[in-house]
Amino acid sequence: MYPVEVVTLFPDSVSGYLGSSILGKAQEKGLLGVTVTYIRDYAEGKHRVTDDTPYGGGAGMVMKPEPLVAAIEAARARAPAGAKVLLMSPRGPVFTQARARELAKEPGLILVCGRYEGVDERVMPFLDGEVSLGDFILTGGEVAALAVVDAVARLLPGVLGNEVSSVTESFEEGLLEHPHYTRPPVFRGAEVPAALQSGDHARIARWRRWKALQFTRERRPDLYARLEFNKADLKLLSKKEEEL
Image 1 (cartoon, rainbow, N blue to C red):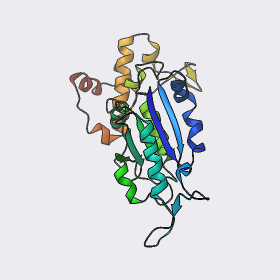
Image 2 (image 1 turned 180 degrees about the vertical axis):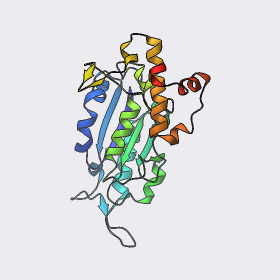
Image 3 (image 1 turned 90 degrees about the vertical axis):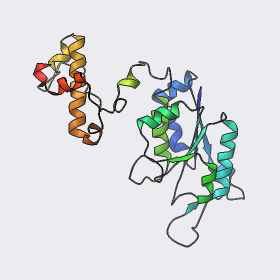
Image 4 (image 1 turned 120 degrees about the horizontal axis):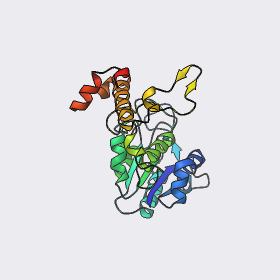
């Protein structure tokens, strides 16, 4: 079982998602173990305060180090040795599918959700790193933590019903995924491509690869520029759809 712990000030905001769909089924199968830790449980005093005004002035509040570090230390004590402790933070490297693959090989994962203006810098020595979803601002780290758990869990053996799914999806080969179709064969005048209805598996594979290459070139030129093409890809790119 792969253990994950989410350390947060708002446990209700993550518990529902973590217990539903694929993540919920993975827990039922014993493939994934999820713990949600409430930071306020580790705060001292009558009011269990977890934030305070920033030194030097300025807007907003800062998460206090004492309860947060106590929560992190408790999570480490529960986790297997070597489990990674990562803070969801815009300062971290952007999370990618490659990073998800790396984390899926770790003995466990502890994700710390920041809030307000951020966390006291003295918390940093108690972390193994920081992770960002991208160059935009969120209300808190909970959404980012859920994204990381979801991406990593899908890569664990047995979590997906079809084990091929995790290696054919977008970004696994540096490509966007090909488009998908299901019944009916015609919807409001739009038909399912002939290749997909042909029953010819080789033709279907060629069409899907061609569309993945086309999609990536048109919609993510940054990814496309980094691709290394084999002879089959170069031949595909020279064809029109009706020639596949």
